[in-house]
Image (cartoon, rainbow, N blue to C red; front, side, top):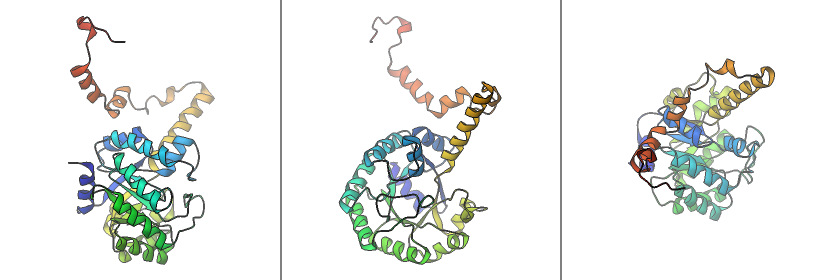
Length: 294
């Protein structure tokens, strides 16, 4: 089954779909390795890992597409991407959908922020007019080749305005909508007023989702729950911890018991597949075949 059909079936299923967010091919592999059925990307994380900067819109369209292609091709489960504000106007959005779909992704979301976009947890955002966003949505719908490719519309608007905007975007044809609840009350209330299947990004360290599980959100009415920050922050925590140990003590020995075993890491990066390809296709010079290609 192709990945876009897998994603569409997940959305049409009866259970909430949990999707941690990756920032490179290795973090995407980890998501599949641990048995998740869907992966997503994090623009926040990709800004940090690719450029070493906060999520401030500096990553270019071509840089994003290149990394998304690497990530999607490294896994056998569907992946959804953060496509920012479509990287321009409606015509830019048309190309964005084509290129992201061609990269092997199964879906994406676009947001109604003014460009360049900003992470709402870092800096306040400004929104474009509803009519302009609907133009982007219509361009996106026309651009996709596979009707199972999922297009999600996101808004950072306050509660009441968000409901109006997202219902208008759903009427314009998007498959899902993504609000940004600011507290637990809004988290619980959004599903009562939104007409579309809902995509939720689990907030990092915020009151909105403290004490709440993805399954709880599913019961509220959310369909896809992503975790945009968790792999990134876990990786950054581990890196700083072990580097501090090396700087202060000149050794990393105290971490050996906590580090992934070498063989387990090789499994994570799919060593069995490449060993099999090696066995099938590579010349075994140990058998004295007589030809060595340099």
